[in-house]
Length: 223
Image (tube, rainbow, N blue to C red):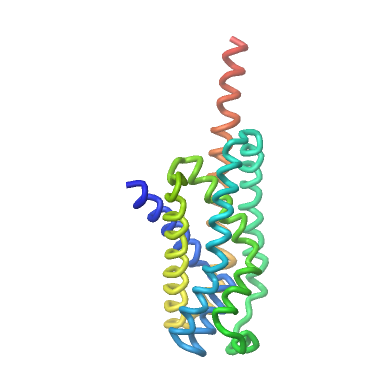
């Protein structure tokens, strides 16, 4: 049961996390449009080759952080501001979105697997992304990393990234004439609102976990 749960949790968060119109998906769309499905598969494999290491090592690091309650409190509070920062970045970067064809031609001169590896290395945002989610899953006991179970979780995340990117790239290719419309609304509106909502939810959890109990104890001591 734990194996299935680890795979399902890893798959779900990585699949959904792969859907936003980030630069990895934009490059993947160009690869698919110019070189076809086989090249796209190799590109995505290059992306997840790096992401597998990031997901695994942030999972191990997260497990160590769980043991440090004071540090955990600081990280969870920081997570609220981090989510707000991500929302702001998506909103700001929406004005920098490039429209038009073949603006990534220089990348297509490389082996597509290498393109995926290189761009995934530049995707520094995946580090706090995986660290935050791994901490959340470990704190909530949604996953177990006992012995080999952690590999099922990481494997699930990689399968989720693969099919998530494949789905969104294929979908965007089919409606390529509407990409500008989607970009105008998804990046500056939908994604920032989502992260603001997540920040509010995280703030509520932090308050309930660290501050509401303290207030209750102080009231009892006063009585």
